[in-house]
Length: 111
Image 1 (cartoon, one colour):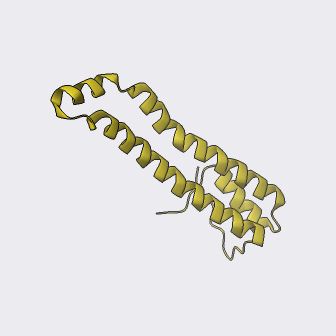
Image 2 (cartoon, helix red, strand yellow):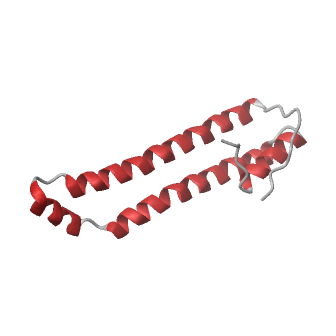
């Protein structure tokens, strides 16, 4: 989706809180993804010696690892959709409503 250009956007207090919450969700999502990866590889290589590491490697459930890693962004995205959808409904101005609709439809700030 192409993100709209919105000049002179001013957020309501509720909108400012929603932006903070979305940032927090994104940070948690990044932390969760990193934690899942580190925990899996720690589980694989935590044993002493090649034989033990091999045993842990064959016992590790890579399907569960993959599913967890893929689910993390999906859960975050659904939460952000919920927040932005509610903000679009409750927005005080048309510009703020336009912004929240864009977020709901997948627009993100440039990195």
